[in-house]
Length: 412
Image 1 (cartoon, rainbow, N blue to C red):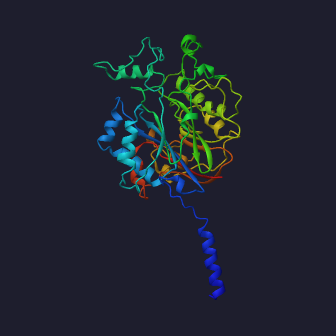
Image 2 (image 1 turned 60 degrees about the vertical axis):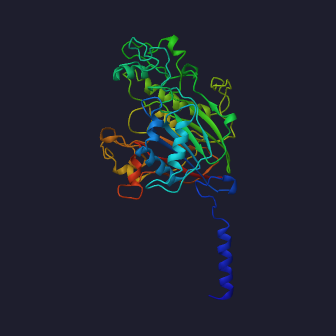
Image 3 (image 1 turned 135 degrees about the vertical axis):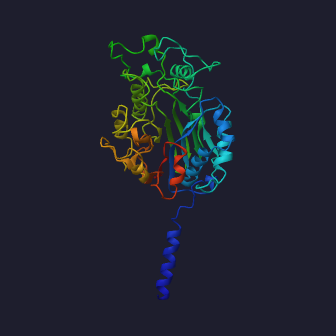
């Protein structure tokens, strides 16, 4: 190589080096770098307990599944991650333990220690007694466990809570972030009445044709089975509104399909929220009404419990959200492990199993239930479902939960 060509090559290398992203996913000090991409993830981690305080006890005992969940997050190293099914406690003791004893400790099959300096959590409806006979069995479930309670009594208590759960906060949500969270302007919709939604899918008793809930109950019933959050995060790409939720599964009911109807409308809430600010019925827990500003950018995250093609549920709800004009059109995230899950080859299957985000056994098969949906205005750089095929690197840590993590890399 001539001296002139050698100098040109050196100059080209220097120019390329100036374009390399200097932020490593998981850098605890975001002010030290200006990443060109932002990694955002959602993960139903199944970190819950049927007993109040039980999650903390799980974590203090060195829970093997929690270590696998932490290992997955250490591998992915998202800048922002919503953790579904993480039991809520007001003092944050379980969140402290998960951060300190799991994420900040290198895990087998994982990666380097991972620290999130910012987090957000808030109360949810699961396990909160309603004082009403929501399942119409003629009895109101107890507000708290009673001595000698059997499984049927526990189920009755859960069914008559605002959202199914055996103690307040079960199946809660936890948002972790490398970047500052604007908690002062966050909005929660835990208390929003279902009846406030225009054209709500009010459940009907098919035997009588009458409404499943009488008017007195219907006016009180809350839409969110957990909650819906709009949490602004100040990132190097600008403010991103994290729209977090975990709608009820569209099963565990009867022919009235009350959970299917609720799942539909919990998903529809986001469709309405991003549809413009002219939604006066959509009032948050602080009394502020209206949807998201037209120029705001967002990512919808969570286990939405609805596959576009397979499994139970009113599929039109998730399809309409995927096709919303403010949601970025993009290739569906994929993980090759889904094709090897039990039930992936069912003859009645419609969707591609590599798009699945959960392994639910041979009777149900893998389903796409977990979503990370960015708004228009972002550019999708990459995406995936962390579900390696059997025998591939990382396949031994995915079974800490029956769900798989979904991630996106976004840029401006």
